[in-house]
Image (tube, rainbow, N blue to C red; front, side):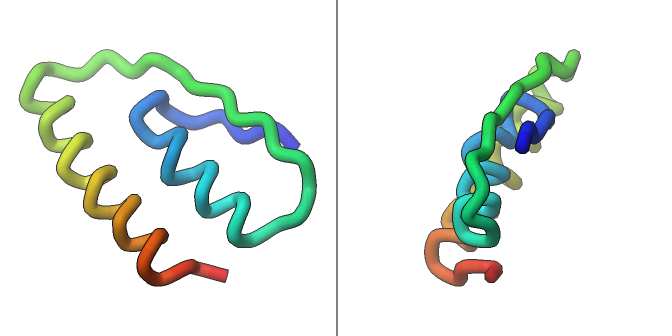
Length: 59
């Protein structure tokens, strides 16, 4: 399976895929155009989300 998502979301999306399916997953990142404030916001959301999926697996 190939999952395409933004570069900043690769680790969290990959973690979720590993928790939920047994198929071989290939992660592909895209490069979004964000402002510095946009990158900061994504960093905060993704970091919190990553800790969440580590502490409370989805599947």
